Length: 97
Image 1 (cartoon, rainbow, N blue to C red):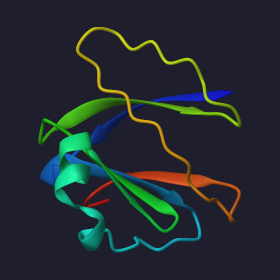
Image 2: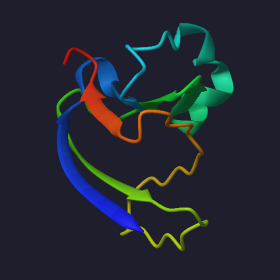
Image 3: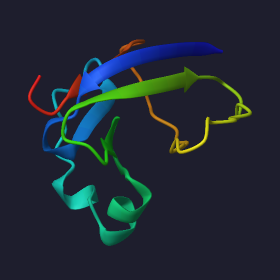
């Protein structure tokens, strides 16, 4: 399992995780009421993460072939999803990066 610890600027209360080959996929249709409530919009080879702050946010990403055991600190939000990654690498970026 690989763990990434990042600090991202979450402009517009969001950031993205996507396949390195994907050029900023359009997630506008993926932001349903459920996605907003769950803080995560899933698209084709990209995931949008909603944040509660419009500023720098700490981000922890665990990459695993199995469902990892996630024990977040108090007050943390945890989401789990699968993403296709043809490029072999992911990009984690703020909305305006």
